[in-house]
Length: 205
Length: 88
Image (cartoon, rainbow over all chains, first blue to last red; front, side):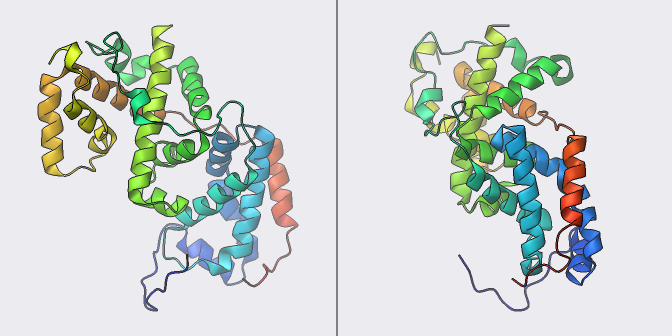
């Protein structure tokens, strides 16, 4: 996957640039600052990928150890955060266990496209019309997180990076080593899967 | 368009692009096509609205605090790492 890069490629100076430079110049006592900066984000990312809290903790620890080990190789060709998530995603994938909650399977578009007359909606349901702040409560947030857990891993990775962590399509593609088109396809299917889960929840409310 | 016509090929074609539409990742022609279509097709309009709401809700999923015991353990592991990372 090594692509020859021009020697004078411009370094990306993001908010972590100075801290990374300090650590790489020998100030190893600054590494805990980097951990503090990303600990909560990585913990939640890992929890969403592993589901199990102990596995998520192992993954976060392993990710930071890998970051420390390979930080010297970071070339500032991307934002540090993107590189960090690439390490984290790869650590999560290695750690994965077969999940009875989210068996690996392909999601096809057909399963989400309403075809039977009874399934075809004729009006926008209330849950899609009410103001977001009137709709949100702890129970619903639990349902959303539960629904995310049930997504097959390859779709979950994409929707978590795009809609929860806020990475762009191009950044997600880079983190997961996928094409932009592939990210878009997986994201759309993941969203449709979640939409069906939410629909089920609101219909049975 | 009534309910019986919703298996129309055109609906399915646009259905595939709804996330890209919501993410502003479609070209102008496709955007206009979707906007025109959802004015005429209630099922596709509903699909778009419920998908949009799903994305809005997903963005609110929130973060849990890091358990204090784990944070402490992680700090100790980091402090006890060899001070010089291996050359890579």
